[in-house]
Length: 314
Length: 220
Image 1 (cartoon, rainbow over the protein chains, first blue to last red):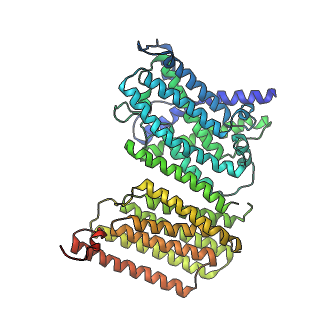
Image 2 (cartoon, chains in turn cyan, red):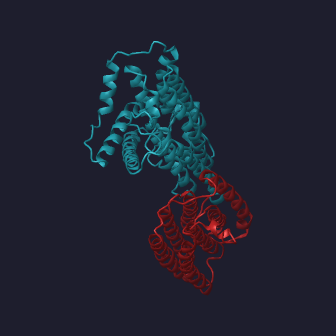
Image 3 (spheres, rainbow over the protein chains, first blue to last red):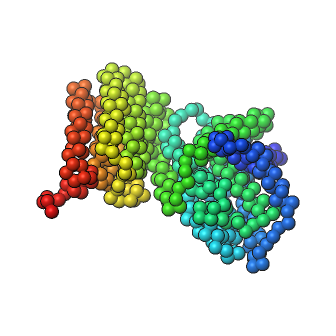
């Protein structure tokens, strides 16, 4: 039991502490690919430190919801990070919530983010919140569809069991998982405010979604929001790794293999980050009205994955 | 779910084929449509090669070669030349908007899979489970022909449908006899030539490739 709790702690801390590094790596890759000089791998940490040292400024009409929201969102992300198996499938927390509840945790964080954005009553806040909801209500069913395909293969909705069955069996090609993987990447881009849907580096009024929502935040609140966004990206990458390339995630109780599994995870995250940066460099941002089509495509691919599972893999 | 590796590869190719069919359905640019068509041919060729290798059917190697030469090289090249000569720069126009087309596509796929499942249970070929995908890609190509206004995408839809039929033949009976296959290949090639001539005629008469013009019986 102690072992399980320790490994749970180790993994949650790993996700929370490595998340800004992952963000830094993606930003660096993007800069290299776009012929800019890179800001350095540790830049997100420096930003966070700077923000934590500043004094918070709140609008006069900010309610307590506005002040609570960053903590709730950060908490949701930490909870989500403790559900997804990254290095080991021995997670006591994982029994608390399955893949569907995980989607619910993300939804909870999103609702609070949108509420907080509308709380101050500025035009940008509500604009960002509306857009976020537009993207989210389309991305959520697509994400569920993506999760259903591995759930069908492994006969369980618990992420732990999914990874255990997918990662620790003999090698087999699953065409349905290929569909699910493509759909998952599309959902990942949409949910994490990456480039075809939203540009994470912009502060241009008419195009921003995520940035518009956190515009009113400052200092430690902003730091928590940005950190939570980094953790979310990290979790999404980890889910992708857990479902579509689960090799290297060790079974419960194999302590000596833990450092190896951690190294494998870091290597996979590096590859995933590089791929994400490449994807963002070669594609242009879409008009917001194209987003439903993009996410409709993701939903469709998820459904196709399920259908091909029934046709080909039974 | 313990299929031999070759069957898994064939299933993978089949699902790639379906993916390409959907990509074609959602595509707005003619040039990308042609590239997708070439990719479809390449996947088809790879699939035929895998089937030939895993079942030891020598004539399938020839049909794979025909697929490679005709559908990956010659036809896309012809179509490409055609759109350069016709100077087509506009994007593809659709009758129904693309998300709705996609939803209809999903309905077609479900229909095709349901149709194929009972048939596949009686078959004993290594490729039996891919019949549903073959039917689905034929139906999706049909859908593409129906929902496009301009002549060139319709022709690409027609050629994609032929790809789907070829795939159906490979998956149900390990391919058609060589004579039939050669005949079809020639038909497709000549058909494309004739379509090319038609394009020029249509454009000369109506100044556009919109086939709605052909629906008028009288000159105004």
